[in-house]
Length: 537
Image: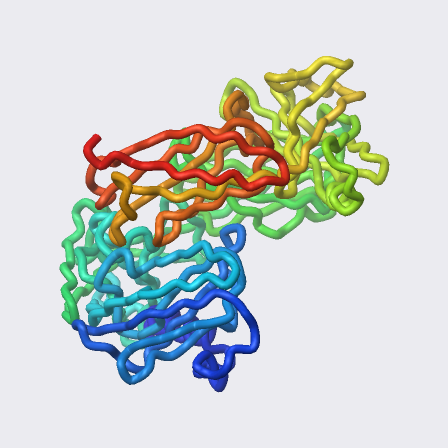
């Protein structure tokens, strides 16, 4: 059975070479103007032909496939042309091979029109292999069992900051993962019982090689260039026994069942950490619900009021020990509400006004405890909104569409800078949410002692608007992606004075060097800046 690392490699190849016959067309006549990437791919210093190189457009944290790709020639050189302006990640697809340097695993670029980017080189080395067998406590092979490998140090080498690699065992209980970057790893089989829910009854708890459930006790596997670590076997303990929880949703005022209500379950990893899922199921005509495949632990059942509802319900906590849980009751009650009007200031552009009408306004209510709730409302053609089903507490508002920011909340003509206190079942009316559409941007470059950032350096950039108060919807502080040349670009900012904060380290395990600088931005304009990190501090 092929491992998932093989499947991932194939998927990447399909992504970059969706139309194989066009792969070499980059060397033909250019029909459009645009940016150009060029460089060389080597293995042990020797240019390697036939390696796939492509660019992936990065837009708002999502990866979008493009038709910009090429194969290396006989000397290992590649050239990709006609790339439009934007953020891109340059990637190499070579199954079984891995980057020799951490900086080669994730090369990003901010590209302007008709820019030429040269010498974007990639040095590859053969990846390692880890293989072994997974059995139960009686020595029987386990088929289709989940396998994960984790870096012993999450910050190590080219692996950082990639997630764990995954695969599954075959019909003999054997797994094999290849293309693993050199480093030290822990290997585990089974499911994480702390922060996920079982998708099948009788699952096995995550167990590390050779047969321990604590990661700190796992045997560390060292992978070197082109090596194979064999017989990394894992023995899983007896399957975890799962239970169910049953109950009803009723109207807290009338005692009548509430039907067709979506519900879900939240698991408490500890008092300060939870994980939850919606089951996709709804209560039946008698208001009954059933939660299945619950391992021993502490939980809470919750119901989801449909948009526009004026009722709410508290989470109902329960604990699973060694048997099914029955008799749970979730009581709905009329919630508090807030209504008013959205006012867009600073632009007469009808397109932007229409875009705002397509957004939703959100109300986030927090209490002194960790309890919070979130409800939303559509924005009507006249700008009005009405949100119901809120709990008592401090309410803050936000717009669920990028670039729209609530800059002021008014109640009875007075600005509410610390949120609005909402009492149980209280109905607040006449609110005015003043909204701005953010079109300012910061374009900058980070220098190290006045020189370019080294290729293997780690850089982070964040910007914060001075004077903004933190709220659940606050976007005054944003992070910026820094490309391989130290360039960064942050857009969708409101006018104002921003503090730009830069952190740099030659290695993430070493102390970080920091620098800050202020810049004034104006709606509709791009503010340029250069910020230098003193490597001696």
